[in-house]
Image (cartoon, rainbow, N blue to C red):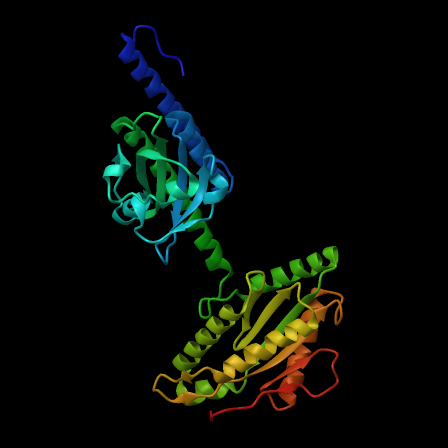
Length: 368
């Protein structure tokens, strides 16, 4: 940015003008980053890069706040010890960063040795001596998403109030970026999620099963599908009402969610039918998964809205690609047919596609 002649006079004034111009240029760069189609991580890294250009700290980091636990995690770290800190978590309220995240207020500490909020264990661990800290909350609409923390060593200068003002403005930009990204993510999740169970909906399932079959073909990796429904679910609605039935489906969805890996995808297929896509899993592995899920359904204590005990089990069908199918449609059909074979055998069982033996049955407990 060009400073017009005569606009600033004297050394101090010129320095202030140059710094002001640099700050405006930095904020414009950040605004451009926010308007870009890049992923949120790239945007945040660009914001932190602009921090380094303008304020020149010894080390600086962006810590994001866990929405549930309140812990802070080092998400972006720029320093000589970045590899040691990236992904590290701080307990809720711990240290200067934790205090700022909890109170939503900025802190500038000129000498950390005189502040009880400073957590010295990182200095000892990383052989670093911190002198001053500037820490501001990253927030939007009163929600704190994390903090930006700048550190200077004993050999560097101190942070000023002007630094804090600039850093707060930058942190506000970061807060907007995170808020927008999470809003978009929530909208995406609403589009693909079943409201009742919290699992994926059937439309998303059909998209994913096609994708996983193609990936299985490409990398020649095993892929399995587990299809199941709840035994005698209609009688739950008839005898205890639809509110009990809906709550039961929600609780079953939570059980499924607890038992799958990050790579797995579970969906409510429709009514009381569920499907689970198991990438990188052969037929034997998916059979073990189905047996485990059936066992947990039988052992979990379910109750009606009036407090009556409900004994719940399911009929499971297991199929694999390419063992039992050559396409996504055939894989679904193979798992569906295996499930109906489990139902025909007396329910409360796991049937495997291509297995002519009797489905593995569970032991029913209690009464429905």
